[in-house]
Length: 101
Image 1 (tube, rainbow, N blue to C red):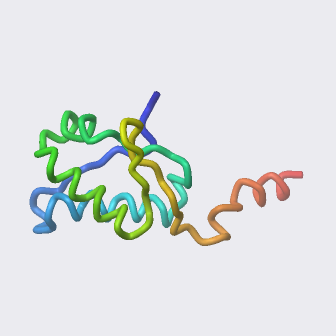
Image 2 (spheres, rainbow, N blue to C red; image 1 turned 180 degrees about the horizontal axis):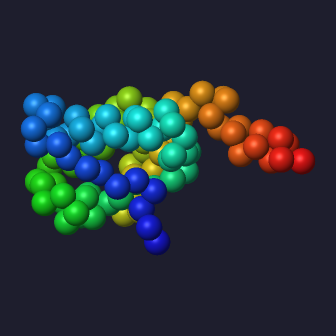
């Protein structure tokens, strides 16, 4: 199964790595590309993809959890608990279908 989000780091941005992960999740939530119930990649998957310290990923996920955006389920993973997408973004597919009719 393909992850719902793939993280990319910009080493030259001056932004801490964990904050880049937090910002990317928040942006995906705003755009509606990830939604409530979606599972974030595991810490192990992110570490393997980005070659970063597991504590960095865990810190990002803790910050997202503290903000109420995700919930960690022991042994199952981290799941989106709240969206930042506006109602209009959430209904694009429905509107598109209506317009096509």
